[in-house]
Length: 144
Image 1 (spheres, rainbow, N blue to C red):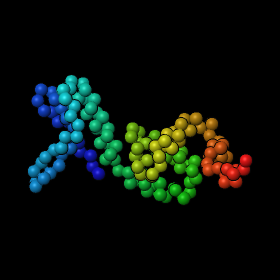
Image 2 (image 1 turned 180 degrees about the vertical axis):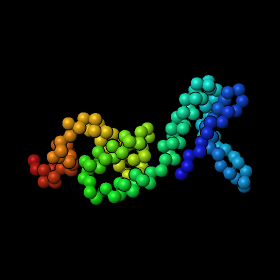
Image 3 (image 1 turned 30 degrees about the horizontal axis):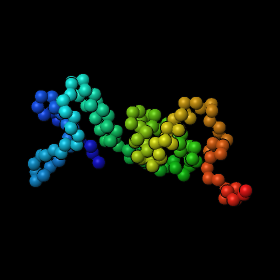
Image 4 (image 1 turned 90 degrees about the vertical axis):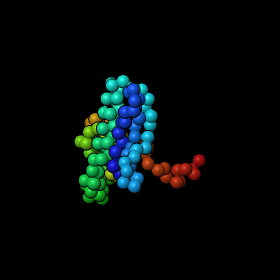
């Protein structure tokens, strides 16, 4: 879904965030948030954040989805985490959200992968999960 919000100026530097829509061929807008009086600097900051949100929302995630579907059968849990982290780094700002949306991998998993990529020497190549990770065996649960 395309995000087409914009900041509308009312009178005397009063602003609101609005979403346009059409009714019977006429342009209308719905106020999402009322900012009130703002300085020019505050307005620029909000417009910059709004542009970032739009770019994250409007970028095409189909290539990420297709690549993930191709690689999924070949990757284990660790490789999925590291691949999604690397892909989000390449995309830059908003990359984590895009990759999470395209693949269904949680944002915290992608962040964990990014931390692992920052210290590649600490990654244990022989293990998929960290020591103690994963579901516990049922027989251990009842052994007391």
